[in-house]
Amino acid sequence: MFLARARPQTADAIVRDLGSDDPRVRVATAGHAPGVVGDDRGEVRARVVEALARALKDAHQAVRGAAALALADLDADEALPALLEAVDDDEASVRELAVTALGEIGDPRAHDRVQRALRDSLPEVRFQAIVAFPRIARAAGVAHEIWGALSAGLEDDDALVRGRAAEACAELADGEELPATVADRLARVVRDDEQPHDARVAAAIALGESGDARCRPVLLAVLRGEIQESDPRRLQAVYEIVGELRLEEARPLLHAASFGLRARFGDPSRRAAALIALIRLGDRRAIDFVLAELEARGWERRVAALGVVARTSLVEARSRVLAMRADPMTADAAADVLAQLDGEPRPTS
View (spheres, rainbow, N blue to C red):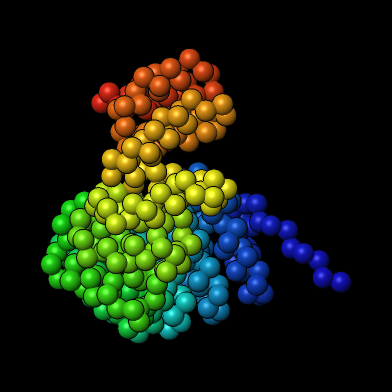
């Protein structure tokens, strides 16, 4: 009869089980290792990290991959030399996880290896290199290299890599104008109907974050439902950019998302995002609706309306927000929003 092996609870047990003859035990042990280390910064951590670094040379690829992932969870810069070697592993899955770990650790000494991984033969490795490179390049003091790496990623043969490069562009844009080459490549992705929807939406968000109106066709297609977007973060970004860019042609679509039957019984976060966009368009119906919601009977609705006020800095709501400080259910949230409306820092305890 098979008896399940007990989960290792100590550094001794981790070291022992990483030496087991059974690769399944070694894989499971690597997965348990970060939990055993916890917040320890002394001998327990040192012994476990050393054992995991050795496991990066295990004969079984799944063990090597699990060890790389555990070292990522531990933010184990002590294991950097072993992880740098693992980036050259024969198995793509191990290279991918080693690059993931290097990105989590963010040590500038990993710059050259991760930069090389941007050109790896396997798209999974290139994907993780796109994720890791911006952080490592900043740590290495060569942030100017990031846009070149992302620009190349936008023309990768693999759709997922192109999509991840577009997402990274959106994360970096943050209201700033994009380099012309990057913006033009993003615009080509947006226009290309043959591109996967994920890549087109990510590219449109990146352009929108930088104020480039070439994002418009895809953003409107998402609002119309012609492009199905299930990621709530992306969907919220689409709505917010539509408001920030003052896309008037989106107003009827935003009204449907804010006041239609689906809005009433659908995803509340989507409704909130649509209301935010409408308020940025100066829509009177949306403003009046949010003002009324601040006095709704249910405290959940009042708090949701506070969130919209906070995101739009709706000064017209100030007196109603002030009144909400008298209600214990909304007092703290109202105080935060008031501080924001008044341009004052909220004290922290």
